[in-house]
Amino acid sequence: MLSNSLVDLDRRHLVHPVSSYRGHEARGVRVLRSAHGARVVDAEGRELIDGFAGLWCVNAGYGQDSIVEAATEQLRKLPYATGYFDLGSEPAIRLAAELAERAPGDLNRVYFTLGGSDAVDSTIRFVRYYWHAKGAPERDQFISVAQGYHGSTAGGAGLTALPAFHEGFGLPYDWQHKISSHDLYRNPNAHDPEAVIAASVEELEAKIAGIGAERVAAFYVEPIQGSGGVLVPPAGWIKAMRDVCTKHGVLFVADEVITGFGRTGPLFACDDEGIVPDMMTVAKGLTSGYAPMGAVFLSDGVYDVIADGAGPKAVGHGFTYSAHPVSAAVGREVLALYEGGLLDNGRAMGARLQAGLKDLADHPLVGDVRGRGMLAALELVTDKAAKTPLPAEVQPATRLFDRAWEAGLVLRAFPTGVFGYAPPLCSTADDIDGIVERTRTVLDLTLEDPEIR
Ligand code: PMP
Image 1 (cartoon, helix red, strand yellow):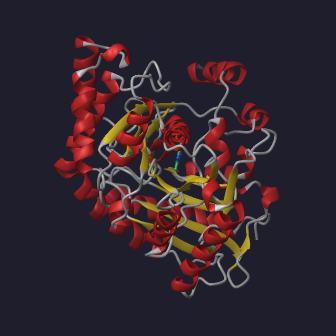
Image 2: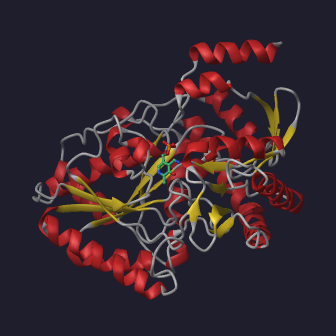
C-alpha cells in the first residue's frame, strides 16, 4: 500500500536521471528501503546483491557505522562552512592534505565539488583560465575519446561521447573534438595491442595537427571507459596518449570519477600505469555515496600559473557547497576504511570476480569478458563469430536489468547489451559468487528468450 502510493507520487513528481520519462512512468519506480554490506533490500523486503555499488559509488559498502558517526559528529559540530572570505573547516583542509599526499606525482592542490559532473566542468574552466594566464587564450579546443563519459553538465556532456547526451541538446560544442576509442573487443587490431596503441597515437597526432597544436587546450581520458561499457585500454595506451600531449604542450586530464578509490586495485588507476596527469577528477568513491562530493586535483605547475595569472584578483569559480564539511568528514573516514583493509579486500574480491566472470566466457551469449579489479563487464552477442549485438528494438537495457532484478541481482545493463559490474569493495566471497551465479541464471533465461535469439 505504502509502496503503491510511493510509486504513484514518484510517477507524478520525481524526474529521474538518464531515463525515458514516459517509459519510467509506465514501468513505475522500484523503491529501495535499506541496505547493508553489498546487499540492498527493496520495499517488499526482498534482498538483492548490489553488483553495481549503487552507481559505481558505494565502494565502502552500505551500513558502515563509522562513516555514519563521522557525519553525525560533523553535523552536530559544524554542518556548514563556506570557503569564501578566506574561511574553511578542519575536515575539508585535512581531507585535501590527505588526498594530496596520496595522489599521483605533484597533484597537490584540491578543489572540492559536489560530484563528478561539476568536477569535470570545473576542469574546463581551469583549463581555459590556465591558457589565458599563460598568454595563449587561443588554446581553446578540447579533445576527448569516443564512448567516453565526462558527466552531464553542458560542458562535460559535450566531452562525453554517448549519443543520448548530445541528441536534442545541441551538443557537442564546436570546440569539442573526439578520437576513436581503443574498444579492444570491436577494434580490428585487437589481437595486436601495440597496433591499437600506434593507431590511437596516430589519430591523436592527426587530430591535434588538424586543429593546429597551438589551438589545443586539453585532452580528456578515463583510465578505463566506464559508461561506454567498461572498455579497458591495452597496457601502455594511456602512457602513449600522455606522451603525445606532453609533446604538444596539451594539458592531460584524467577522469577518475569511476576508477578512483580502489575500483581497479590501487587508490587511483593512474597508478596502474605510473601516469601523472595535469589535472584529475574524482567523485563517487571519494565519499562512497554517503554524502555528495567530488574533487579536481591540480598539479603544482597548473595551480601556480592560475594563481600567478590572477594575482590579487579573485579566480571567479566557486560553489556554495565546495568543500562541504560533512562530506569532507565522510571522505576522511571512507579513506581510513579503504586503507584499513577495504583496498586489500577489494583486490582479493576483484580477482575472484574477474575469474568468476571469465568462467562465463563459453556461454553462447557471451562475446567478451573484460575488466580490472572490482570493475568488469560482459558483452552479450547473438552470434559470437560475427559479434552481433543484441537487437536494439527489444531494449536490452530494460529487459536484462529486469531479469537480473528477478534473479536477485542489481547490475548495470547498458543499451548495447553489456552488463556492467562494480561491487562494493567490502563484498564477501559469497557476494561475488552470488553475482556470478545469478548472472549465469540471467544468461540462461535470456538464451530462451525468442525475441533475443
Ligand atoms: N566522469 C565519469 C568518468 C563518470 O563516470 C561520471 C559519472 N558516472 C561523471 C564524470 C559524472 O559524475 P556525477 O554523476 O557524480 O556528476
